[in-house]
Length: 280
Image (cartoon, rainbow, N blue to C red; front, side, top):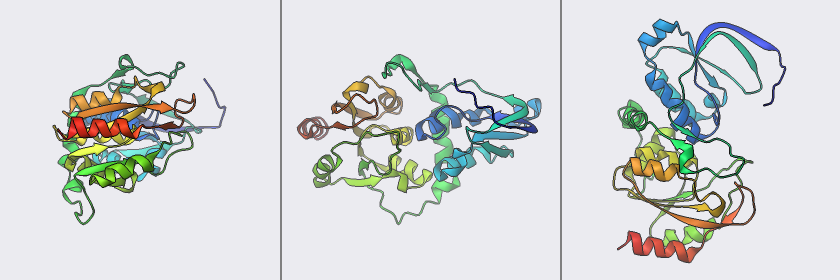
């Protein structure tokens, strides 16, 4: 552990802690952290005298994170307090709900297996329902392109995640098959939910945007791939199973030893999977 001896700011409030590992990552925020708000109600707020919700400041800086937070928090009538991981705050009291959706955050072996995942499916079903019942999704402007056949392009990636691959080669094949390439982060949180609900087939590399599987309709088809060094990572196949998505995976060839390093996808293998398993 690393302890920074910064100046401590004292805040005389009781807060509900809504942060943790991966607060900057869409999967960890949407699947692990945010659903805890679904279990906070007026009775608990009164019983524990909660004054505010505490979040990592990144949850307010990333617009799609904030949209999702606002949706779940607005009915609670609590203030939002934020701080970065470099700040030290001291509150009168901190209320915390144990994690019920969890994927191992770090691994010395650089492997994450099925035993390193657990989900409370009811929480994700309730999150999905809350999003689809919101005025925000009902008021989506339908003048944008919401295709039935989606290819997920990587778009902007972090300095940490270097999982570059031969995207143009793979996308060109699917473009010829009528797929539309989308950079999912260019759509709002509610548009992303609608995109996945509306899609019939979704294809793309493994990544946090697959968290939106919880918004898919049962029977949706999907293809993804994982570098061989993390081929046992089962998080998104598990979510697909829960929500009735027919999701197939290919193993890609890793080009270095970095868990999040570059890799290459065999076009012939993915062509066979798509044409024989999805078209027949």
